Image (tube, rainbow, N blue to C red; front, top):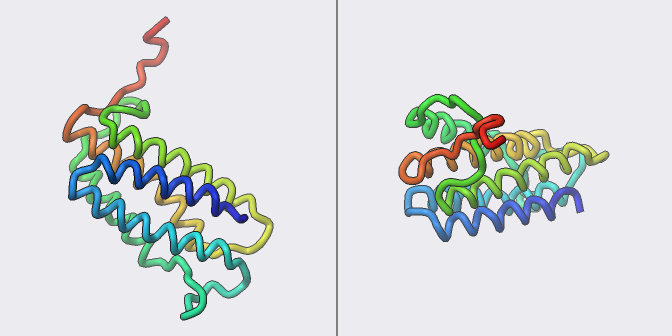
Length: 155
């Protein structure tokens, strides 16, 4: 169906990350997992009216705003990027990078749908991949450190 499989895959990868994470990030990951069930329900009900109701779950702007606020808060603690980051570092960060790649695929699949979709659902998917990237950096900062790309460094 409409990108729902990719959303389920992202949710599963986030679940793997949650099993490896400490309590602080695990709580945030579980909130995202719950949002992804809302997102799946939203995507399964395309149409012209994107207002939430008792019968129809919709992603709402507050969910997107929460992701953005959490991205900003995590970024405050991180050193500025000086290089591209390779997926890896700690096991939890590697799982978050995998979830990010799947979330990006889900976003591409949703954008390609010919039916009208909730714009907030599309915004959520867009912000989710950024959230997962920043979360992976935050996790690595407290342990293994970012794995930096070395352009041409292994020739």
